[in-house]
Image (tube, rainbow, N blue to C red; front, side, top):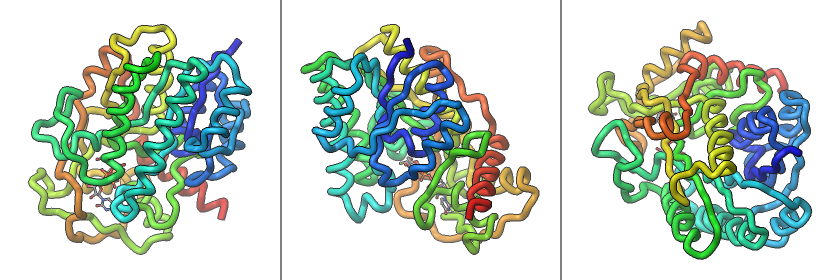
Length: 341
Ligand code: UFG
């Protein structure tokens, strides 16, 4: 019998790719998602890729009774992967309480329900944002946790702390995965990122500009202390990231985790500048991108990229897809969306 995994936020960007990888690894997936930032059609597209329809609960993970019902109706849940959260850094500055209520409330509710139903394995969706502006590059898991730049970032730090403390009062084995910059889309071009309104993130903005939805890209600052003056980030293909979640689940299920709560960086280990991203996009799309240089964006750190050796050694995981593949898949996805409209 297939082992059951609950994926909260399973119709979102990283969640949907993880559902595909889980199904392709033989797990039975139950998605809990309120569709607040995703679309019902994602379910059908997951099925087109894998041939398997995921079980779906349109529920808010903050809602105790709905979550209980899911756990009640599915005995023998082996693990939960918790993605469901708000993630817009800028919005979190305007509406901090919305972020604290949702991102923290959902985790606490989930942990209590897991405890009630004796489900002990949790994979948590964290972020490199917990490192703030790092003093030393690349950033390892030993790097200090710095004061968060935004309520969004703070919720990730607080959630990691909650998980660390929750293990004192319940049976819990957790892996917190700290993502660097997830981009790209599934190579089938059936699932990808669906930003609502004007995208905040670089790659969706680039692809929307190239397709004609946006006038031009603004590069936020070219006077940073980096080789070409633009910010450096560690971009990682969402499929590589999704695969790491399957490995994390298997590690918990086979009790190979070394401590009750573990933390891993997920990146490629290589930093790329905004200008390098633009060049790579132009190469794979065989086009010229319209862009202008603007002011720095508040809260941006000049450079951050991962030391991935812990994930490489302990999880036996390594990012495999390169920047060209990431940009190619992101571009194919944008073209697919355009054809739908
Ligand atoms: N950028 C531009 N123009 C744009 C958008 C972005 O020049 O229109 C630049 C940014 O200044 C930054 C880089 O592109 O240098 C990447 O920006 P993103 O917004 O794509 O990503 P961030 O690194 O700012 O944010 C990501 C995640 C957050 C997470 C953060 C942690 O999206 O969820 O990493 O550092 F909090």
